[in-house]
Image (cartoon, rainbow, N blue to C red; front, side, top):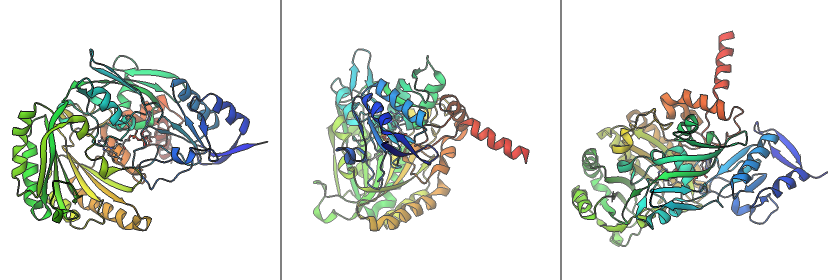
Length: 486
Ligand SMILES: Cc1cc2nc3c(=O)[nH]c(=O)nc-3n(C[C@H](O)[C@H](O)[C@H](O)COP(=O)(O)OP(=O)(O)OC[C@H]3O[C@@H](n4cnc5c(N)ncnc54)[C@H](O)[C@@H]3O)c2cc1C
């Protein structure tokens, strides 16, 4: 009898009859791949090149029924299961080694309702798909800053980008989600239907089921915004970052200025002598009127003596892809991230010191400026709790030679440690690496117990565990009971 070997939820090795696999494959519209099939090698790849896992099966789902069949198959066999949206998460949880990968990358439809200013978005859509479709009507919702990121993972973890200070996080614009829960049932979660599930989905990651479609509120944006980059030499980093920090404290909701410390890429507006040298890049995006944006952003040119700048009216959709060349898929990546409610001079010194010893030309330290509309939402209103994160630092360790793995990772860890005393202690699950499971509870803070309760209700067996995992409340209670018995 032919069988297929797989790993269970508990990582035990088991076999399933090939006839059962064939029957399952016949129910999946896009087919099911195993290691011997053409297309398998490409399908198992994700954005982070350090992720090199081999699922036993990859189910290429194209509709809700496919997803239900995949969830039921995994549940029936207690098969380790993962969910792949855009495949961007740094931790690589989209790929289950030895298990079933539910691949949603074929579900990229975006339908815009311009009259009601809403969008219905498939779970495999990338930010570029969404922005392109919405911008055709002069509309957008807050998303991230790299256009090849998946809408699904970004939304489920929270989501922030250039529009967040004006219109909130991605989750603040989520109106409804259709979800296949661990029991294989389809549920619609919104403020009016399954409100607990809707609350948990807005920041709780992939813990509660497989989202088969998202409905978002849209806002008029662009199509041109005032945006671009101002680049300062590293020698001026202290003066520039302090001026940036003070300026951003009072900025309008329309204006976002993020800082990036890295070695200068060969940007056409920089002199050749600056290429490859350490610089401070200030990335500016003003989502309101272009002339007002020019006035509002003018001080950013006066924090020091820029080595170059490129600021002006820019198509919003193009600016959404401005960082794509630096964040192309396939590179090796290790990130460490902190939230800050304020950026003290000492915190800035940590960043400057670390940027002075970058371990490679692709490594960088990103500090996003948040706050404004994002901070006006009550921390308990959604599962995402870090509303006090006015700045989020992301230490991007990025390299290509595996021999540099340890060197770059230890640099990122060291920066993280040095910055810890200045940070809030909370985190952003969308930026956590696979070795940071212990940061999950702290990242959810006061919302963690409610998330555990929701997890117990919607996924009591923890079928969806390939994520920054929230333990079902029952397990936590059992552990407590054992302690009480002792
Ligand atoms: C280069 C880069 C730039 C980024 N920039 C930003 C940014 O500007 N702002 C920001 O907020 N974040 C940003 N992120 C983080 C990003 O939000 C997360 O990596 C996010 O998880 C990516 O979603 P994905 O669908 O592409 O990833 P995937 O790896 O496919 O999914 C991540 C996890 O989400 C869950 N998941 C995915 N789809 C579904 C679904 N349909 N149903 C249920 N669970 C699902 C799964 O648990 C999966 O493991 C960036 C990441 C990268 C790599």
